[in-house]
Amino acid sequence: MSDLFLREARGEATERRPVWMMRQAGRYLPEYRAVRAEVDFLTLCRSPDLVAEVTIQPVRLVGVDAAILFADILLVLDAMGAGLEFVQGDGPALRHPVRDRAGIGRLAKPDVGSALGYVFDAVRTTRRALAALPDPVPLIGFAGTPWTLAAYLTQGGGSQSYPHLLAWSYRDPEGLERLLALLADVTIDYLLGQVEAGAQAIQLFDTWGGLLSEERWRGIAMPHTVRILEALAPAGVPRIVFARGSAHLLPALAELPAEVLSVDWTLPLSEARRIAGPGKVLQGNLDPAALLGPVDGIERLTARLLEEAAGGPHVVNLGHGIFQETPPEHARAFVQAVKNLSGNTLPP
Ligand code: CP3
Image 1 (tube, helix red, strand yellow):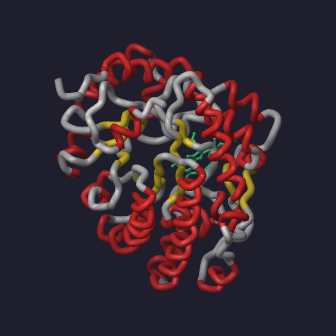
Image 2 (tube, protein in one colour; image 1 turned 90 degrees about the vertical axis):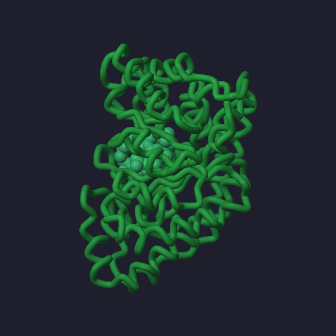
Image 3 (tube, protein in one colour; image 1 turned 90 degrees about the horizontal axis):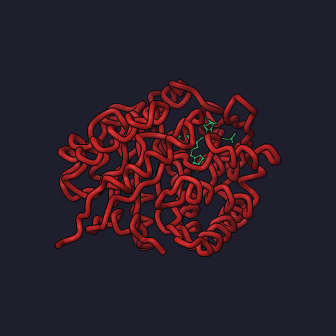
């Protein structure tokens, strides 16, 4: 197996930088759209053989150095009884939003082995399918942070500003704290289950962490994320944390017990390195919109990105998920540019 990604994520010297892309399995690939033409999104998530197929597509077609399990952060909320639906064109919806303490009482604390066993089956099936490739790559598992899950759960779907969550955070902080603690409990079981089934690294997505000031993020969101990361420590897999809109949170994010800090595209990695310290492995952070532009620009920006991160270990990625409008050959150009341009950090 090529363990380049795992070695870089542990901060070891490597022959070149590994590269993968957030949302790398998805609609920009015609081969993904062909699978989705046959089944809806949730059925796909619940079909281990199809999950393995679409998880591996970007490895085969784009050449990335790690696979991320095809699943969704909202599956956990479905398992807790929130009633997840994906309405074509409208994104996710939760039929039973939770907006107060009584709502928390209606949530289930599921036995993840049965309620989310299909995800663990998918991990096992995907690991077997990866092992059959000529050059297998590691498999990343993932979950949302409690704060980000609570954003969708309180809103009943997606939003730009999550007024229900923010209102709760000011109206009844202790009540919200209970919800976040419950979400953390379930997420710990869920992630340990993924590792046990074969996930070789774990990424936490804090997509909406940037809604909070640093002081509020430290007070409200951080303790639950810390608890999840600490519970994963004995599992021994690299832990990655991604927070979007989070330049102002970097000093706090850098304190998390995670090996890798995944940075969005709004600040140079040299600046992130200065804030996080030289030892931290950074992941990111090409502007995903850059992949909509011409290939010569992608190559130039990738070269600059590699230079900005040169001061320490670096897992190359985008600063957020790839746009579905991205031409697949542009994604390939990005991955190829990393392979061609990134230097050796092994001792001579
Ligand atoms: O390739 C991969 O990255 C693995 C699979 C993956 C998906 N979602 C598949 C997906 C991962 C890691 C996620 C994480 C996820 N899901 C996040 C955190 C990352 C981020 O973007 O900040 C969030 C917030 C979600 C919730 C979610 N799922 C939304 C808001 C949507 C609708 C928006 C959209 O892009 O359509 C989804 C649907 C979703 N999840 C799709 C995919 C491939 C599109 C579904 C389709 O095929 O129609």
